[in-house]
Amino acid sequence: LKDRLEDRFASINNAFSSFEEEMKAQGRWDDVTVVIASDFARTLTANTGDGSDHAWGGHYFVMGGSVKGGQIFGDYPADISNESPLNIGRGRIIPTMSWESILNGLVEWMGVSAEDDLNYCMPNRIQTGTQMFAADDIFE
Image (cartoon, rainbow, N blue to C red):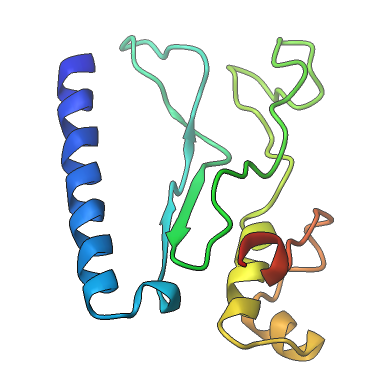
């Protein structure tokens, strides 16, 4: 598994490097943002088949010429034990941020700035109760 995963990461790296080179050659790199999103996480405990099941949460990677790189948004939970208030069983950890937290800054970067328009683009934005990052948090 680790060997295959390493090969796949190398393949993804080569693809994104080629894409970046092409966008720079066209003078468009500062106008491009690539978002890589995981639509679900995995349980921390094994299932009966010795694998893992779908869980909540996910990870996002954002890259582009205008992106302030090297940042990590969010915090790793201090406690992921069975007693953690974020652990709802079998290692299913409740996320502390919503996808709207990052999407908010991306939508602003694309030119949407009025609160009503942001709420239209992300109807659950306010109800999440999590921090909303602004475009200037993510982009130069």
